[in-house]
Image (spheres, rainbow, N blue to C red):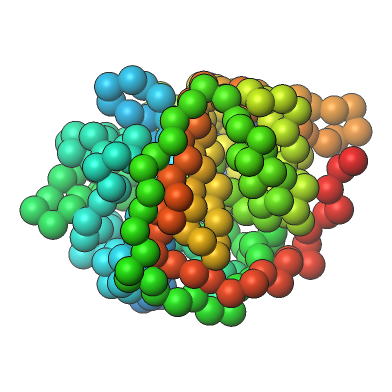
Amino acid sequence: MNVDARGVYHAGSRAVQDLVGARDRADHVGRSLGQDIKPVAAAFLELQPLLVLGAADPGTGRVWASPLTGTPGFVRATGPRQLSVAGGPSPADPLATAVTAPDTSVGTIALDPRTRRRMRLNGRLRPTARGFAVEADQVFSNCPKYIQRRESYAWVPDRVPGAPRRGDRLTPEQTAFIESADTFFLATVHPGGADASHRGGNPGFVQVASPRHLTWRDYPGNAMFLTLGNLRADPRAGLLFLDWTSGTTLQLTGEAHTEFGADGERTVRFTVTEAVATPAALPLRWSAPEYSPANPEPAR
């Protein structure tokens, strides 16, 4: 099902589209969004060992992005507008409570580095006996831009997660981790829902300005400005960095604001409220990346 683009965007996204002169293009792209999970998308989901979930913790209101893993098939379409997940976040994950709360607004993204494809599904969560389901409000795919290709992964079933380490600022080790990253996931919210998206670039594309502040350039995309629109409506955000080899995760929650330069460049500045680092959190080991040819050189 295609939808009228006028019903796709809220005021935050419209404000950003108008600011950069992209409303016409956004209207064109927005017609591709729908609520139905097409057969090709359903087949894609069943091949994935990783799904990223974005939502606000019902207790604190803080926004987080959390990784979910399982053998392929743990995520699947169980109806034309329903995604089902077997399992959920670990009990120590910041979103462990969110997946037990009916009608929670969530964003999900499945990204396959092997094919450089990604799929996003946003909607309302419903707990189930095996995990949870999401009733879709928006289903769409994005282009492969800025996705690093990783040819294969290995399942590491004997990997034991370490205890989460929490703090209100980045440690030197976490700073080095972020500055060497080529990928992170970004959760945002708005009054009507939530979204989870991907950001990629060559190592160094995310810069740490201080133990509580980091920045990244917003590279040109599809002109919908769903993420920046959400941040304009509500600055709360969650970031997820993965070590694709060791399975270590770094989750950050805080607020993000976008600066618009006269030259058309956009910079997002994020302030850390809380950081959660979990050693060996994911039982996946991916091969080395082949960087996307679309990646700009990081700013110095």
